Image (cartoon, rainbow, N blue to C red; front, side, top):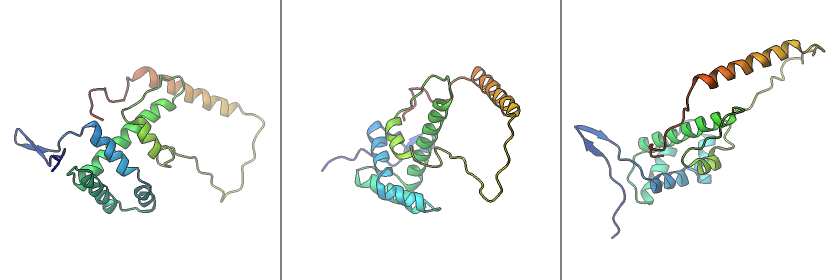
Length: 166
């Protein structure tokens, strides 16, 4: 019988915590999460507890013992890291960043409307007349550009270091 790569919990200094996940396990989690049927259910349901239970069951079939909550937390962590990376990369002039598993996550999240927000158009109102004077628009663009420059100059990277096990 093959030994299981999973542990249920780790006891450290009187605190229970989930065991760290290795690269293979995270790849397996992404694979289960990315299955077409799982994605279809996540898109069509507001309550995802049953879906995360299916993901945990899928992980169990691969030899890992992870509960529903742990799978949910890890997926949300992966989603957040992907979001931050994508946000940084969307800024003009910024150095392109990448996070661990970016390519695999992009396959799943690349077309997700919560990942790539689209502007909505309110069609219930009459269209506004446009003026030939775009001075107000130009001022707004300059203010936005100035704010962006201040944000870039004031902050460091929001991305996790390579030490994090993602």
